[in-house]
Image 1 (cartoon, helix red, strand yellow):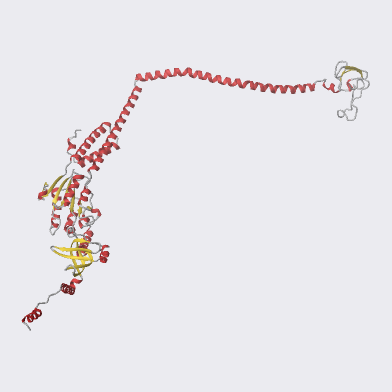
Image 2 (cartoon, helix red, strand yellow):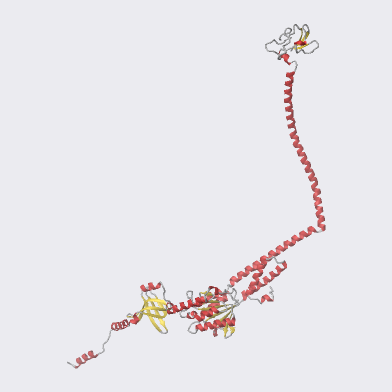
Length: 77
Length: 461
């Protein structure tokens, strides 16, 4: 599935929040079918994005050094 | 006296005295017992080498730097002490008792009767005073507690860069929520400089990294090791943090003042990491459920739309002009088919009614006939009774004059006149002898002889 750019740049929380809102909207309102289909497609893209984020994420570790945030180097700690 | 003997006596006399072991031991024992300061004393030290053999006595060593004091607590005391508190390695405690010699070991040792954690002393009192003061200030108030972000993007960690606490936290975050970015603000966590370092680390972390949530952590240790987390400056820094703070300091049972000031308190560093993050498995489950709902809802909408299209198609077809014509034709045909059926139905109904009458009719007729016959018989009887000749059967005679007129009264005839008497069987011709009319009063006076004109002539049969 191709994910629109604006979704690809979303953080997990934002994407999940929009996905939840879309499911909620589809379940509670009767949009015109075309609008429902559009929401559905966007929901699918958000789902794919969230799933990918969860599966591919690797914990980023950094440290505060002086007034900067730098990559974590345990040996120097 | 020989010289040898003399020398030997002199030697004995001037030799310095030799003490026995017991004598030395008893002497030292006396010295200690005279030092009354050491006979009723509190001693503070860090506990090491705790052991409690089967005898039930408790042995441990109190240590301070490279000085140690071996301690023993006899079993009855241990049993009483166990109800409140038993020392563990690493703890700083205060022990009450006396110093005495242990002859069997050639050592002195401390005979303890009461033990208490160091907190119960002056430090603990200070701790309680500080806690009360900060509490009164509202620093620990429930309404100050902020909710934790459900999906933190950036997690700050204030802890020792080299401790097990950081390793535990990173492992936990990696496993649960690798989406997050961790920013560590390394800090001293024990020692005199620790409070200041912790305050600085917290401030810098907030200012430079702006994390969504901060973990302040330290692995387990003695009460003194955790002292920095009771320091007022650190407690205030935690309360003032821009990002919500979760503490994970020490073990389950350790409570420090930063725990009260934090937005949430976790028992250990690992628990703190768990508290600030959702679990990846839970998130994946949640995503699957959302996917299912999305799918279900869309399918429903599509099926619904399909049905509506189909319904609309049917409606459209019904209202098309040609279709209307066809519909009329169909109705006409239907009517045409229905008409004969309706007629024959009607006919059948009429026939049925007729048939019903057929069966009912004879019944009625017979009834009428029977009734008429009865009536006829009745009439016949009455007719018979009324027959003019009927009384003749009972012996009466019918008298007529010569003109054939019926004689009803004596005065209708004259003496000598001929009359005819009709009897039940046959008839007579007679002549009137006398005529005696009845007196005019009352019809047929009793006792008077009835005029029986026939009697003289015919008599009874």
